[in-house]
Amino acid sequence: MDKREEKLCEKIGYEFHDISILENALTHSSYANENHTKHGRSNERLEFLGDSVLSIMVSEYLYKHYYNMPEGELTKIRSNVVCERSLYERAKEIDLGGFLYLGRGEESTNGRSRMSILADAYEALMGAVYLDGGFLAIRHVFMPRFVEPIKRAAAGKSLKDYKTMLQEIVQKNKEEVLSYELKSESGPDHLKVFEVDVMLNNNVFASGRGRSKKEAQQDAARLALVLMGEIKP
Image 1: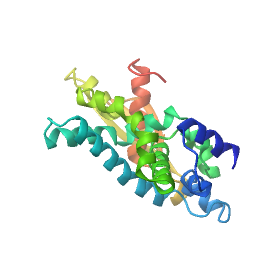
Image 2: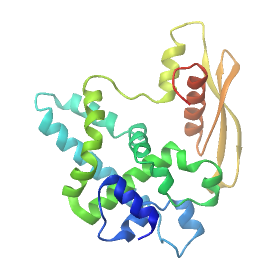
Image 3: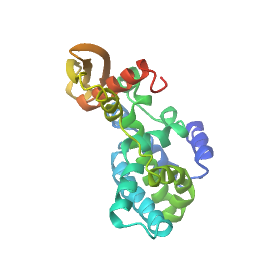
Image 4: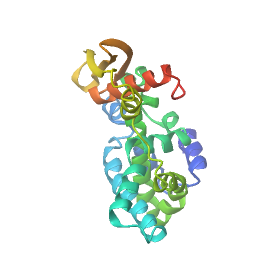
């Protein structure tokens, strides 16, 4: 077992019977494309599986612990704790980005800290644990990490994306106008990088970068919130 996988197993409290499944979960498509024989396929199929496992795990917990809550409210809570930002936070708790196998392009553009990559990798990790140890292992390893986020969501303390947070702050002053403009895009099709300006009253407030326009907008909004002192860098 590679030290990378061994350390991650210690962090999550689970020892894989088949370590190749974990290696697959940590392999981003950019690395798989550059190293065809190293780890084989990327973690995208495991991500697909993990997404379903996560939904079932959280749904079961909500059904058992919030038995007086109607279906609509349960759905809202589940959506809040399985969203990209929530998974990103869970991934940061175990420093998942530091364990990923990334291609050179993603390494050079801070892929290890990118929200979409970390959220997807967390789902892939869940898929890997499910394949290796079944649903009991999933409950043991991951459910404790979602209890507090569920409690916060049930109490109405929902996670909000950066664009929503910024919009809510700006709209308190009806004279302020917030908008986003594409500044540039570069790189080949499989490694596109977009740069977006967030505009306040037609003036550039902050600029963000991402592998998609939406990701760049979120990054720009995040940097704007940092400048405003609303969140930490």
